[in-house]
Each structure stands twice: as structure tokens, then as C-alpha cells.
Amino acid sequence: MRLKAVAASVAGVLAVGLAVIVPVATPVASGEAVAAPAAFAVQPITWGRCADPDLRKAKARCGTLVVPLDHADPTGPTISLAVSRVKHTRGPFRGAVFTNPGGPGSDGTWLAPYGSYVPRKVGLTYDWYGVDPRGTGASRPLLSCDSSYFGWNRPDYVPTSATIMKYWRHTTEKYAKDCGRSKAKRLLAHVRTTDSAADFDLLRQAIGLDKITFFGFSYGTYLAQVYATLFPDHVQALVMDGVIDPDRVFYRSNLDQDPAFQKSFNAFLAWVGKYPSTYHLGKGRKAVERTYERLRKRLKRHPAGGKVGPDELDDALLNAGYYNGYYPYVASALAALANDGNPQGIKQLYRGSNPVGKNADNSFAMYLATQCTDAVWPTDWKTWAADSRRLDRKAPFLTWANNWFNAPCRTWPVAGTPRVDVTGAGLDDVPILLLSETHDPATPYAGALAARRIFPSARLVAGVGGYSHAVSLSGVACTDNAIAAVLETGALPARASGNRADKECPPLAAPKPPKKAARVAPLLHRTWWSR
Image 1 (tube, helix red, strand yellow):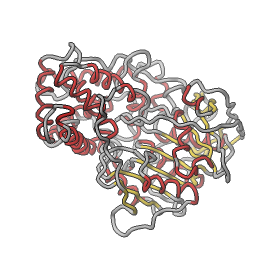
Image 2 (cartoon, helix red, strand yellow):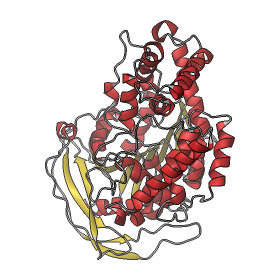
Image 3 (cartoon, helix red, strand yellow):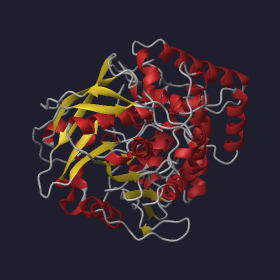
Image 4 (cartoon, rainbow, N blue to C red):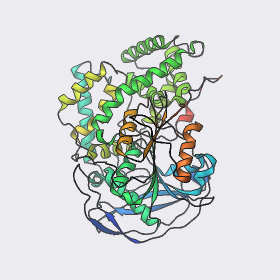
């Protein structure tokens, strides 16, 4: 799970409140029309001091957007969304950029200062908005189902016995049941992507703009696609990094991750194997892989410190699967455990992405609440088991872990609905920039190619040979300049023929090991995505 520090920018105070019309946020299945509009009077946002010190440093301002719990009932109960804004500081003023970091389930107010990363200071000509989507972060109500769900020394994800299989089936079914009993259970029928898309359109209307640019990462690319499907007349441009195939949400898209993460994990092992004198885990990928497998077997018999078993190890190593910038941190933690029996680094990595404590499962709960109801999931356990057994033969690193991560959707207390039919209609003249590394593990490259086929004006910039997920504006000039161009003038690369990228760029380069052992602590800040 990749992190990025948020840079500083400058903000101001201005909001416009209007009585507006917002379409009902019901799922749009293939062949269905968007429901008739219903009126909701948007109140102006009162901008004030942000609680987050990073946002204050960036001179952002924060406020609350009130929206209907159910967009089909605009006069019914309301909920509140936390919103942040960094105002433009350069001219000409080019509009507003709405952001979403992915998940689903991730808070997003921290993204408002992201415009400072855009080359040539183009980002500073926009107002940038971050939102904690409904149910997350500082938005209220907040969904939490079991704050102690991510414990220590759990049975192996791989169900090598009937006892292990029974444990994980019971555990995931219980989590779904606990969500149905949550204090915020009233949210569960109203946290589909269509609900969040309608929320974003109310934000657009609250700030008084006719069109906005949507910049989405990972799941945020799907949110951008759904927003553009429901509100095509209000889209100025789309920028999507780590692109989801809208036709595969979400059961199939999670299956697609398993072989992709295996390749990404193998790339990490190969990187470690290039530095045997640094990490002492073996020379070459195969040797490091054998070390990892021996360690995993040892931890299954004797968890390190009584806590770190094979599951905690794999969850910690998954960080390297997402982002090559984590390689030194993860490798150092792996080496400390394998060579010295010191589990502290692995414990930090595991706990950083799997917290416990009050409302600690909020991101996980909202990830499920959205994905489980956004589309129809299989309910027959035989389907899940057969797919995982098949994939485990070629992609053992993540397959069963991913199965159990998503398994609560099988018995989720609110039924899934037909997915939105994303067609690209009405967007022929909208500049759309797609970004993906060709070995992206979390949102495989095929998703970017599929979106390119759906949207007639889309152009795809590929980081050829890269294994990281959603790493735009990380210093690769070829990629970052394409973002600056579309934000500055709407310019896109020329459309190439065939089913391929329109512009090829270098990937984000893997780092070299530091002279001193890399500390894990810098990772424990913000995440872009859940799974």
C-alpha cells in the first residue's frame, strides 16, 4: 500500500450555495436509463481550519458538505461529508479538480494539496478538492464493524485442512454479520459508487461550477467513470491512474489481481536477489524465494514472538507488491526476521496496513460495503473455492489471502445490484487521460486497455515494464508532463491504432538499497488504496 507525503500550497475562502437538481443515485444496469432527477437544496460549505496538520501546512481549508443519505429521498435523512480545498494561486484559473485516492474505503481529504506535484505549476491554476467519502474518515456517520478484526497469529490463509477452511469461512461470515449490526448500519444500502458519484456532483454544485475535472487513483478511476456516466455534461476532463475495467467489477477484478501480484512479488524477490551482500537472503530470485518459503513454513510452526505467522508475513510483504519504492523497507524487515529472528519490522508493516483500535476497521468495512453492493457477487462457496484453488496453482502469494479479504461479500447483509453500464456516451469531446504501468498488480493493465476502448477520446500513457500501482506525479517526466498538458490545455497524445498505449514512458525506477538499513516508520502515514 503506497504512501505519498502531501506537499504545501495556498488556500482561500469562497463557497456558493444553490438550490439544485441532482439525479437519483440508483445503480444503472446495462440497458437502463438514469432515474428521473429529484431536488436537493445544497447548503454552502463553511470553510475553516483543518484538523489535519499536513493540510494546515498546505494552507488548505476544510468544511462539511451535507448530502442525502438516500439520493432517491432528497427530503429524508442527511449525512455529512468532510471536504478539504486548496485554492488556486496562479492564473489563469482553470477550474476545480476533484480527487479520490481509491480503496474504496480510503479517506480523501488529504489529497487536496496534490496540485503542487503537477509540472510547470499547472496544478496551481486549479482549486483542488479532497473528500472523505460517505462512511469514511471524518465523514459522519462512520462505519465500523469489528475494530479487532486484524489480529495476530491467525491460521494460514491457505486452507490446507478442513479446520482452517472452517475458521476462515466462519470468521468472514461473522464479519459480514457484524456489519449488519453496526451502529452505522443505515449506511449499508447507500454506499454504492453511484451514491458517491452523486455526492461529488452536489459538491460541484455547492462550489458553483458547471464542469469539473476528476482525478482518480485505483478504485477512484471507477468512481470517475461512474461520475462521467451519470453526469457527462459536467465533466471538463478525466485523469485516471491505475485504471479499473468497469465490466469486471468486482469479483472478477479481484481474481485478476492474483496472477498480477504474483508477478509483482517475483519482481521484488528478484530485486532483493540482486543485493545478497546487503540482505543476505540469497543471490537471485529463486534463492530469495526459497528463503521466503522456508521462513513461511517456520512461522507456521512457530510464530515469531508468538504473533507473526505466515499471514502476517505475507500481509507485510504485500507492501512491496504495490510499490517498488517500498523495496528497501520491506527487504530490511524481511532480512531482520529471516536472519536474526527479529520480527519488529514485519510487525510494523503488518500493523500499518491492518490496524486495530477504535474504528480501526473503517477502511476495510467501507471497502466491503461499497464493493459488495456495487455489483452482484457469487453466493455459492463452491465458486469461490474452485476459483481460488485454480489460481493458487500459479499465483500462491496472494490468492487465498485475497479470497478471504473479499469473502464477506458472499454473505453481505445488503444484496449486490447490477453494475453500472459504463459506455462513454456523451464524452466524445472530453479529454480523458489514462495512466498505468504495464505490470500494475492491483489494477492490471488490461483494465486500462478496456477503458481506452470504452471512451472514444481517451489516451493511454503506459509505464512500460513497471510493477507499481498508481504512481503518477512521482517524478517520471514523460508521464508527469502528459498530466500537465491535459490540465493546461486539454492536449493529449495522438491516438495510436490498435489495442495499445498511445504513449510509452519509462516506469518508476526501483531504488537502490540505502547504506544504512531502511526504517519502516516512513511508510506508516497514508495509503492510496485498500486491496
